[in-house]
Amino acid sequence: MCEATVFLAEGGRESKVMENVVALHLDDGEVLLNDLLGEQKVMRAQVRAIDFVRQRVVLERLPRAE
Image (cartoon, rainbow, N blue to C red; front, side):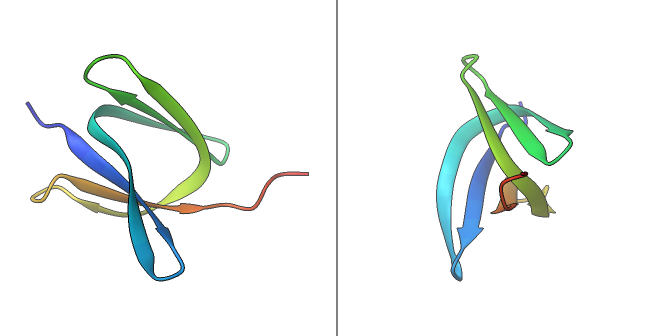
């Protein structure tokens, strides 16, 4: 299968958010991540980069909507 690892870029560093991600959905400034076992995470972020060869997705946080 083609699972990805998702990272969050902050302050010049990347921290791991979730492994074995099989689905990523974007909806009005939110990113919904689903992993292989059905765990979900929702973040206010946008996609900075996707590397299909290394199976990596890098997100960057968006400011809170007011």
